[in-house]
Every structure is written in C-alpha cells, then in structure tokens.
Image 1 (tube, rainbow, N blue to C red):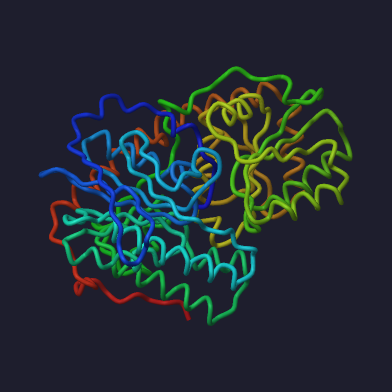
Image 2: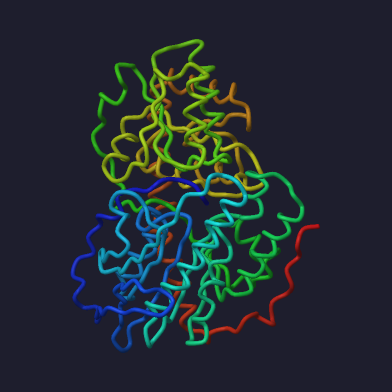
Length: 453
C-alpha cells in the first residue's frame, strides 16, 4: 500500500515509559564491526521486532502507529528500517521507548538491476542487525511489512528461538510489478513465488482490506482465521486539523493538493495532465504536490513541458503540522491513481488522511477507493485526465458541496476508518500469535498456493 504520506506520529507522547524493564548494552558481531545499542528485555516482557524496507521509521505512519500501539500495552519493540531524511537519518535512535536501527540504503534508479541491488543490500543489513539486536533471548514476535515480500526470509533464523512471524501486507507485489514494469512472465512468476514463500513463513497475516484478505486465502493458502483485516486509517489523536494558511494559495483563489508517494504507478502524470486541461479554462487555482519518489524528476520535467511551472509546486515530503496545514488550506485533494489490478484492490492511505482533515476529494473511480471515501469524493472515469479535470472544476465551483463532502469524510473516519478503530484488531492479531506455538517452515495444514498461469 504504498499509498499515502506520514503525519506527525513521531512526536506523539506515550507518557511514562519507565514501567518497561529495558536495558541497553553495546555489542559487536563478526558480521558487522560497527557497534550499535542492542535492547534487552526483562523477564516476562513480550519482545517484538518490526522490520520494513520500503520507508523509514517513523515516516511510515502505518508501521509507526502499530509500534506505538504495541508500546502502549507494554510490549518492548525494536525496529529495523532504512535510513530516511530529516529526523530519520540517525542510524540508531531511541524514540518514544522504541529502539530504531537504520541502515544506509541508496535509492534505486528505476531499473530492474538497481532494485535487485537495493533489495539484496536491505536483506544483508536487516539480517546483520537482527542477529545483533536479538541478544541471548531473541524475540517473541517478528513483524515484516512489505514490499518486498522476502523480508521474513532475512530473519527466518529467529524461528529457532521461538519467534512467531507476522506478515504485514501493505502491497500486492505481483500486481504492483505488473502496474509498474509490465508483464515479463518469468519475473511475474518469480514475484508470485516470493509472495507464496512469505505466506509459508507467516504464522499470521495483517491485511489492509478485505480484497487483500481474499488474496491471502485464495492465492496464499492462508486460513481465514489466520488473516486479520487491519486498516491504515489516521490516528485522530495526533492527525488533527490546524488553521488554514492563505499564503499557500500563492495569490490564487483555490488550492489543489496531493500528498503521497510519487512512483510511476501513482498517476501523478495524469494529475498534471488534468491540471493542464483545467488551466485551459481557468487560472484561479494553484497546486501543491507533497511527497517524493522515483518519478519526481520526471514529473518536474513534465510540469515544465505542460507549461505549469507557475501553477504547480513540488514541496517535498511533509510531516506533522506542515502536512496538516497544507491539507487544511486545500479546497480539493487529488487521488489520481490509475485503475490497475493493484490500485483497484488497494486502500490508498492518502484518502483517509484527506477525509480526516474534512477535505473534498477528486478521484478516479476505483473499487477500494469508493469503499473508503463513499460520498466524500467526486469520481472521474478511470485513467481519463480530462474527466478528472471536470471533477476538479465541479468541486472548485461548489463550496457548499465541498463542505458537505468534508463533513461526510470526517464522519466516516471517526466512525469506521481511524487507527483507533483498527488498533483493536491489530492487538487481537498479536494476542492470537502469542497463544500459538511457533510454526515451522511451512504449515502442513494449509493448501498449496494457486499461482497464476
């Protein structure tokens, strides 16, 4: 679910942390000479390792919400993630009672080989750090968030000391491959095979929606009772509205915004083409795109080719109050993800964040997007920038409709989609994992995966 942006979860106070029986020591191992702190837990404390490769912690707001939820009920949590920007640059940090170990990960250039190098380096670093921080006791639970789908392989050795394995399923990797790189049959089947291996290693799966749960059961061979649907809604205790900033409109009447990943499959090129068409009939708007990704430089060049440099601004990856101020200053928020097998089945996290800030949304009509937003969005024909421009214009011209959509969206988040709602299911999954004996390499009771032909 490569979807969405980070909010100010990093600054969330957890209150008194002193009840946790944690000690810190310095260790070195033969496979890595750099000394890093390794947390050790006292007797009786459930010890959890969370690993991720796609984005740093705590910038990955779903993972950080999960970590803080575990901390709030007394678990000890150690996280391993790539190095990020800003506050995520330190290779080791203790934040909100969580030991965060980061590794240097040069960004992929977009070629297949660059991703092979990135993933191979990530697996090496994750395995080395996991060996170091496991200590004498190891971990009770290991949670791996995809993509990629083979992170559990890097830490499979922890099963020998009794760790249960949880697969936090963010993205449908085979469908993501098709959406981004095409249909090389050999590579596609390899990605399917890696997904199957991940399901074989997992004791439990956290699925972001019912579509992902269905894939885990039908393609992954998981039992229904081993798959927990845990949504990715915003934490309403921290993701709160702030006053609008008129200066962000840059002298125009309206502000249009986008927040999230900027990869080729995310549809930002279609958003720019929609804005180009919108600009043919009106000049009362300004647009800000907050985020980063491998497509960013291509998008800058496309902005220039379309003659939008004076109307479109790329403001980088925003967090905390800066992100919320942008949203609260916006009249219309964009969801331009084109319709693919990947996007149609995925819950796009930015939608929930828009709704939490009571914003109106212009989106392509995708199955899970409609299930998330309901009447809080105005839908355009999928993959049609002209119709997306039409939806944006309709919303700019109707402030009453925008206000009503904002009200509906906020209400839906409060009643169904917030992290406060999802966290109960998340903790239930962990309780179930702790009740079980650790599994071996494969679950013999599970049916074989049905790989696509």
